[in-house]
Image (tube, rainbow, N blue to C red):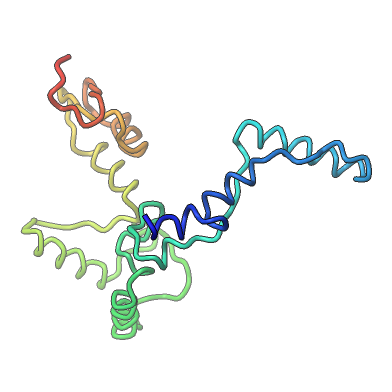
Length: 188
C-alpha cells in the first residue's frame, strides 16, 4: 500500500490531480473579463458533469507497473534491456528501414525484414505463417472479418474490445451471441 499511497494517491499524485481538476471554479468573478467568465462557466459545466479532461504527468512508465493504456505491448519504454536490443536491431538492419512514414503494405509494398520476422514468429508458434499488423485492433478486425463463415455463430464476452465488434459486424456469421463477462457457463 505504501507504493500506491506514495504514488497515485499522494497529494500530488495523478488521481488527486484529476479530482481537483473537477472542482468548480468561481466563474462569477466580476473582475475577470467577460470572455474568461464565460469560458469558466463552460468549463464548470464540464467539471460538474465530470467531463473535464486533465492531462497529468504519468508515473507508471517508470514505476515498474504493467502498461495497460498504451500501444507499447512489448514494454520497450519500461525496459532498458528491450529498448537497447531494439536499437541494436535497428542498427544491424539500418538499410532496411526508412526514417520517414511510409504507406501500408498493400500500397507501399513489403519489406524483406518484416517477412523474415513473420516467418520467425510463425516458426516460434509452430504455425504455417505469421502476419504482423499495426495494432491489436487491426488484428481483431482482421480475424473476425475473415474467419467466420456463412452459418457460423460468434459467441463472445460482453466486454470484448470494440474492434471485435467491428470485425464481427463485417463477418459472414449468421448470428452473434453475447454472454455475461467471464461467464461462459451461462445458459441462454
